[in-house]
Amino acid sequence: MTGLYVSIPIACFRKGLAREFLETEDLPPPATCYGFLLSLVGETDRKRHIGCRVTAGLLRATERSVVLRTVWRVKKTPLGSPGNTRPDYQQLLTGVELVMWLDASEDVAGDDINLEKRVRVALETPEKITRFGGLSLGESTHLVDEVKVFAPDASAKGRTFLLAERGRMTLPVWVDHVGSKGTRYVTGDLVDGLLTEPPSERMPQIRPPE
Image (cartoon, rainbow, N blue to C red; front, side, top):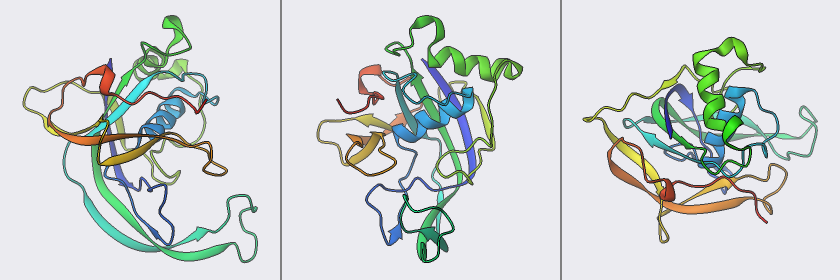
């Protein structure tokens, strides 16, 4: 298992059912974490590493603010089309610091080229990877400030999203970017405690609906 320290100056992890008021989750959902890791290693096929487990934990509380911004009404309509925009309020998080946990033991890509190994290559020898665009977490404009291997600290405490059958949070592990029919969710809780490796069986698994 690999832990990554990730910091983002400004972020919004939009709730899937948010409409007129764009609320944010406290931390990035598993599907968002997975997309971030694929971007980090330069992978464009999001089915390349299904089966791996990923979750996030907050290192500290973040500040919330609300802004008024322009958003697109319909995803299928070309951007910039007349009448395809509207003003909406959006929640933002500032000063986000988190630990992203990745367990690739069930990665369909296999042990030789699993996502965990590719992430370590990207961080240790970035000249060996090919990628494009800025590295963001959440929206494309919310660029990441720092990514590095997380060094466990016996005194570091935080809140980690872990699976729970009757959890109070519902987060996506696979997102249908066109509609919502193909989006898959898991339930869990934000668990307070030391930021050590979480139990693998309580980490959400990235898998599209069957």
